[in-house]
Image (cartoon, rainbow, N blue to C red; front, side, top):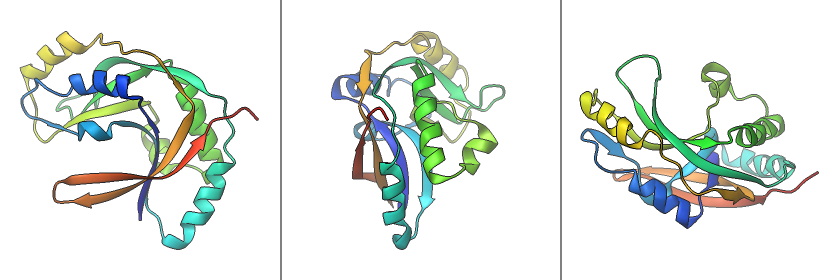
Length: 179
């Protein structure tokens, strides 16, 4: 089964993020009802490894923390064409620390080791260069600041791919708690 670990957004913050998901020609917007901050993409996990995975994630102990959506940008940052439009988070350090704890429980994350980890919310993907429209969009939304919220849990999701996109289902919620 295809799995990932993520932080969900409260409805008020999700609504603010959904408002960003329009007004850019050529953007392939994600499902606005499934916005989340991915901490680790696990990919295809054999059924017999899921119990082990759940047990390892239960051992992650981090205190709840505050987070807010801040800024809008693109990956890759240094060259065109842009491939991903994202909303950033601030402060990033608590989300990074949670990811490090998850990686400590599950073992190294080869994807993050190759690319690095920059906590973000994927808003859209591009199949071709959006051109000057992207510069205009970033000029309008680049300084976006969403309402802060307290992250009190992370989730294990199953992602099922279909002809109409991915459908995400929560398999387990892991409350954050201090050691």
